[in-house]
Image (tube, rainbow over all chains, first blue to last red; front, side):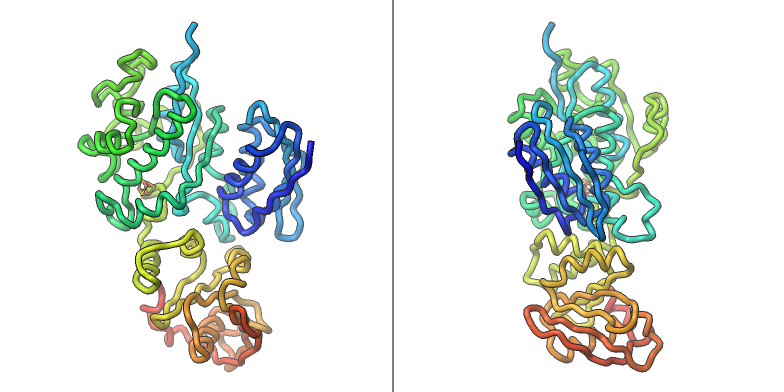
Length: 78
Length: 347
Ligand code: SF4
């Protein structure tokens, strides 16, 4: 299990979701992915994408103008 | 028992594709959604950059629809491949720069490739006969099926009974009797069906599913093609066309001026790629200069940008200028009055 970070700053949705989708394909079950976004829409879309695909959202933070979402990858249903 | 057949549904985020997918799900077919990001998509967030849209839910409707339906959604980045559709549409444009027929053929073609790669059996769309002037006609439906390569594996559940039976119907993968015969522009049948399915919330896109049907947007796109290096674009170009006021005071440069905080924040992300300016001592917008601007041009841009600052009525406003890869300095300028800005500068 390893930790990864994805910089999705200055991307408008759905690009952060698309980046997360591609990154998730390269990760293993139980890996965590920290996604940093500036589009506040990511707060709704990345969790929705996770729910659809069976991944879990461990944490969401709103710091300054950035949204940081930490996801735990569930590979079976990816 | 045979495993269920699998369909890939084009999900736009609107009601029609949602209903089409639900109809097929109800027949016991395994459905997954596919959605394409072209760069021109109208989705909530691009608007949500602007504060006045803050009351709207900030969500991607396609993802939301997939979640309501309980299906997976695959969002595919087709920005590069889509350029040829916009730049060289074989079937031409609609009322604006919307190449709807080529676009539909392209998207169904992408879905067809995805279907083949993932071992799915057929494709469904939310198209309704006669609903859109260019792509949803009896004579253009076969064009989409043919040019996409989907052929008989393309099923349009909302109007299937008005069309010749497709492979999924003939093979009994779906029951044609339980498909529909919607036609025309009225939304009433869809709204009634939504009620029947207990779907009470859905997006109602006005006009079309993308910015290429929006005259304000396409005017700026035309300007980009006429004044840039010809008819082509990069993703950043077309994203920036969605944000800010665009003014072209000279053929060789235009100004992109944020209209409020959300847009200014978004433009901030681009500032290193452009000469940019903002008021030094007043609240006001960030402006990017797109093009080649000499000293006189920068002075003019500063006067224009000052017009959109809180110092607009003062005799002199101090503006901070940062040239692309160059020096940063302040200039004092007299803001333009609104009468001094020719209407034709606004794109
Ligand atoms: S409105 Fe836009 S996305 Fe929809 S079919 Fe036409 S060109 Fe394609």
